[in-house]
Image (cartoon, rainbow, N blue to C red; front, side, top):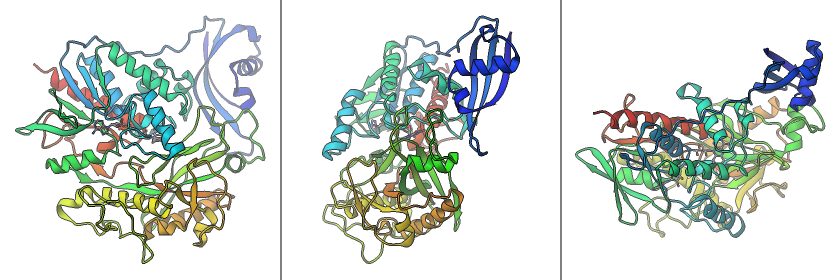
Length: 550
Ligand SMILES: Cc1cc2nc3c(=O)[nH]c(=O)nc-3n(C[C@H](O)[C@H](O)[C@H](O)COP(=O)(O)OP(=O)(O)OC[C@H]3O[C@@H](n4cnc5c(N)ncnc54)[C@H](O)[C@@H]3O)c2cc1C
């Protein structure tokens, strides 16, 4: 017999199948030896009451041979001699599009500006330890895209946009733990993702797909409003019937390229702010209402939202037991993000803390009279000597890139205010609220180092105002959250793309250029690993049906 059960048990009971079986046997009044296995269907933490409990939905196998989860590993075809489709970018959108194309019997040719995982790892180490930013190989660019050295949280709110289970099963088929299939908030961890990414590449190439690293696309080949292929920065051209453009939110050169080629793009709202970090123990004590978490509960997380003067202030990409990572893609800018290892065993809890930025009205100019002058060009085409334009962007032609320029300006400002050596500007939470520079900064996980500044000299005034208001509200929701042990590190600016590449709702092709499929986070249709992967699949579905039409 297979008995479905919904249980609410203490963490120590849910911790292992062994202890769960003991509990179930006792509850059902049967000998434990009759339970041949337990399959967890769904599991979540319920921290609402004083005693934290685990809610777990299971199937109990009683005197019945136990069947493991059946991993849905797709049936891929050999496509080595099939019609090629170009995929620009090997992030989750590109990789999952490739899987789908192989199922259709089409040959994905993945063009990736960065390097493969092992080499990319060295560039990330050089960034962290020697402060060398490689614009082609960093936390955002390279094999697996921004997903490879990400935190690997695999949940999304876009549940209706695709088959999440299929995505998770493909992760498990390539080495992720099975628990991601039942946990309410599945997480892989940065230490495990690179191996999974490499395994995914192996599946694609073994079935005849191609991966080309160090292959940066610099131009689309468009004839009579039909995309015929791409040109690489090396001068080489690659032709195909369809081009899926999945270059992520940090590929500014792609947005400039589209603009230059008169291919319609538009400004898209995004969010801007800081990474905020607290001691993990403090977050545990607030969320679990305890002094010590104990060994059976995972490090606690949180999710916070507030409305301030029509703007959303919210926590984003929370990383319990995590690290604040340098996620810039160019020298001369500071961008931070967060990740954690699979065990989430670092002493700090970090999260993006951001404010929504709308395209209309255009954001206010940054800073005040004390604005330092950055030494770097602020936009493509500016010379090193021209002073930066803090906001006040031209309308008309430039409007599509207005939020991108704004985002870039804040990042460059953070670089200058931080001291120009990749140290990140930072401030204690209490001092930010009080409006004064911190005399000292608390210990934190940003390895390169932090510089004490008044973050109001980095962030635009309306963002600072909303952040302050939001933090005060969050301090009331989570007693102890506003503390001098909390540090804010600028800038969390790559929350999503500040540009959208439009596409037809039905065909998912660009409205002006047939055969061009804007895809994933960079095109403005995803925010995170799973949603990008689902968008990749959706675009591949459209390419599959268009290319296989007689
Ligand atoms: C540190 C960090 C932690 C994160 N944590 C999480 C998390 O826990 N959960 C989550 O859901 N999301 C997380 N994210 C975000 C997530 O990684 C992205 O949302 C996701 O990777 C977007 O997928 P994508 O395929 O659309 O684009 P990307 O992953 O950005 O991939 C784009 C690819 O295109 C390539 N490319 C760009 N320009 C060109 C060009 N001209 N020619 C050729 N190739 C090009 C890039 O090198 C890159 O490999 C994190 C990101 C970072 C940086």
